[in-house]
Amino acid sequence: MASSSGTSSGSSLFLQNSGSEEDLQELMDQRKRKRMISNRESARRSRMRKQKHLDELMAQVTTLRKQNNQILTSMNVTTQHYLNVEAENSILRAQLAELSHRLESLYEIITFLEANNNCNGLANMDHNQEEPYSFNFAQNEPMVDGFNMTNSWNYLCANQPILTADVLLQY
Image (cartoon, rainbow, N blue to C red; front, side, top):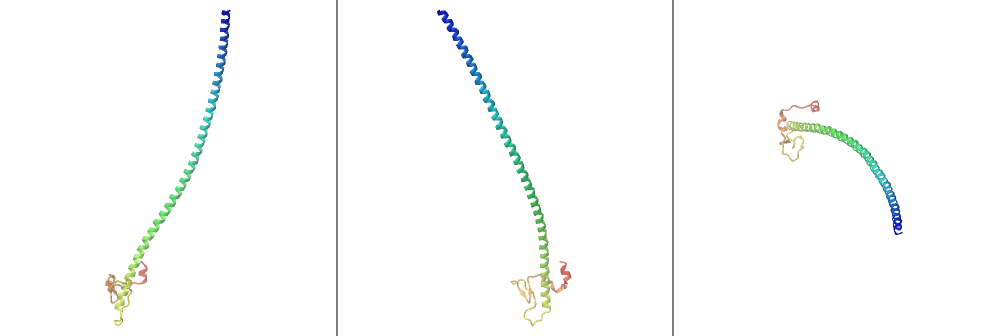
């Protein structure tokens, strides 16, 4: 009996072991399926995050391109405005130079006329008068009988012709 009980107990252990091996295999398969499902879900979430990130980057690229185009347009408008202002400044500088030249010429004419008036005033002066007829534009310069002695035109006035308005307008 001992042998029969030993055999029966050995076969029952084998049955218990094979049952537990099957349970163990089933448990491992179940864990494997859960892990596969979990991995698939994790991969799906990862793909979704990746797609979302890609969509955000594409939206950012679109926004940056739009901003870049606006900046380029603004820069082109500003550059055109700068060129227009620079051209206007060049015209104004040329006008300034021309007007300065004209003003200088007019000052020369005034000085010449003043010198002629001073000379004519002395030539036609009645010596009984206290002061001859003259224009005195420089208050602190020495005057001798109405002549401005520092003005070089005064020395040339004796032989100068009298200019008419037509000649003066040519300047």
